[in-house]
Structures are given as structure tokens and as C-alpha cells.
Image (cartoon, rainbow, N blue to C red; front, side, top):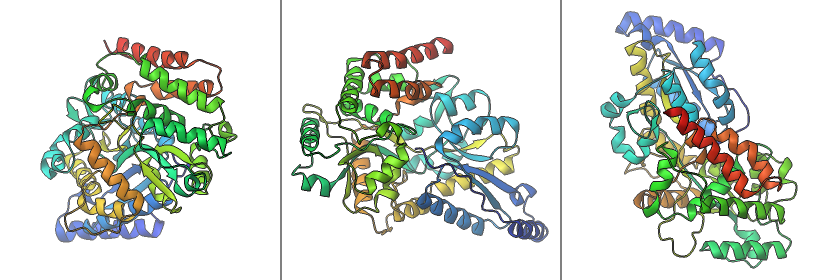
Length: 444
């Protein structure tokens, strides 16, 4: 979810002049509206090289199908997007189409301030509800301060699952079998540590590997039949983060951090750098998301699986859902611009786009066309199977930080304290719950 800071503009000056000339000719010859001839300012968060290449090709294809339209692309990291998007749109110099993080802190806040436009018209027009399930689309719905209901403000192009990456060669060399249950995972970690192998790759200086680890461990212990409590928390319906499961998950991760189960020096390593170390062959396991598939495929020893569930949990939940949603901002001032934005988003969540993502090794949220025959990487094959199972079991979980506008900061502020032993697991979870209860109070 968090990528190397980079801003990309793909509109050279000579191309801008050519586009303007072409637009003028098109207006005269074909009667195209002035809005359609305008540039379309788009922000996305696909800053990895492989992801960026897919987006750029999709943009070129869209331009080719829409003479006179030029995509002005800016790519920002997840964290940079959170810092700048709302301010830019409020100031009137932001994007017309953008990726936006779901949850109260980003999409919810922008909806409240009238900075995003509903896309329900385009869901009906293009049949987006036939491409993605209602439970997935619900993650982009807001009605006032209510999350998960009301009008829809976005749709995503990629699916996301937080799971367990493993290095098969390291496990084989250590004589450790791939764990099938959570109990077997714990035993495997102990054996790896005894062999002098770092059980987990971790980096907590930047990005959110520790957050995903804590959330993934907790949700793997929840059967989908009992998901209502978690859903209520995320959708702002009430409840408490102060549960035995959350405390036990935080306690276990603290024990790993304090007990030498993480890669040495993890406190000074960023999440992205930790991933690169893992790809280079350091560490046996890594808990993170499918958004790293493109990079991970560079090491054929790396595999991916759901977090092994403890005995007795038949349909374990997995943290995940979809990537940041494509949305239309209030800077789409007229219907022609709004419709062009809707067309663009439709293409970005089309079967054609899904095929392009799959060919590059990434997990699309839209199903592949029936006649598609992309060469799938082993990682992507695993991801698609897990995605099918999660949807069939209604076991797709949530990112904890979606539960309030300030939850991500609260977790990020307290995670280093938890890992270093400066606060107890109980205090860590209590900080989350105090944040959440304050949010519920403010909503009333």
C-alpha cells in the first residue's frame, strides 16, 4: 500500500501542442464537445515500476480510443496521497479522477466535504455491479457519517489480500514444512529461530507491515460466520477494539519482536526495503499484501498463501479487499467532464484492464474475460484461488485503519512503542479503542 515517493507526468510539451491541435480539428470536424477535448487530470498510487507500466499503457489505449482526450497523470504514494489529495481538490488544482483510500479518514472525509461525486449512475450504465460483488462495492459507500451504506463513491481495479509470503528454499534448507495451521506456523517459527534463520522479515521504520501483521493474525482467528462484530467496527456502527483477540494478537507480535523472531535491525528498515530484502532471500516468512506480487515474482522461491488458521476455524477471514478506489472529484464541473471521467474509470475496471493487470502479475478485482489466456505467475495463480475462496466464504476482512479518520496515525504512533516493549499490548489496543470511541462520539 505504500510505495516509493515519485510523481509522474507523462505529457511532454510537444505532445500537449499536438493534442491541442488535434482537439481543435476534432471539434470542427466531428462536433465533439469542448469538455471532451480537455485534458483529464488523473492521480493514481501505482508507483511501482511494473504497476506504472500497466497504467501508462492503459492510459495510452484510452487516449487512442478517445481522440482529443489527453490524460495528465500524476502518481503518488499511498502516504503522499493521504497528505495531499483532499487539500488539492479543495484548492481547485487537484485531479478530476483520482484513487482514494476507503474509510473514514479519506473517502469519508471527502464525501462529507462534497469533494467526491457519486458514481451510482455509472455503476448502472456500465454494469459495474456485474463485475464486482455488492459486498466489495459497499466498501465505497457513504451516507453522511455512515460507512458501507448509501451512495457509492468509487470502484477499484485491483483485489488485495494480506497473506503469508514464504521462501520455499529457506524452509527446505531448514527442514521446515509449509505450515497448514496456525499452530504449525508457530512451531515452524521456533524451529527456524533455533536454526539461526530469521523467521519473519519485518521493517517498521516506514509503511505498515506491523499493522498488517497484527490485523492478519487477529482476523485469521475469526470465522466468517462471526464477522458481524468486525464489520460493525469498520462501518462505524459501534463496538470496541478492546477484545481478547486483538490483545492476544498484539501480544504475540510483541513477543516476536522482543524474542528475536524478526530480521535484525527491523526498527530501522522501511516496509518497502524489507520487501526487497525478502526478495533477495532474507527471512523465511513475510506478512503483507498481494500488491507486492509484481516484485515478488523476481524470486521463484517465493510463494504466497492465506494466513494459516487455528484449529476449529473453518472459514478464516483475511485482511484485504480492494486497492484504493477510482473516484470522480468535485472538480468535474460539468456533465460532459463527469461522463468522460466515468468512461475512464469504466475502462480502468474493465475486463481488458483486468487482463493487462494479470499479464503483469497483479491480482485484478474484475474477473478475467472468458477467452483470456494470460500466462499467470505461480503467485498470481495462488492469489486468484485465495480470492475466489474468500469471496465464496464471505471471508474478506478489513483494514483496521478504515474504522476512523485518525486510526492509521494512532496505530502508526503506537506500533513502534508496542514492538519495543515500551507499552503493553493492552495499552496498544486501548489506544485504538479510545480513538474509535472518540470518533463514534463525534459522529453523534
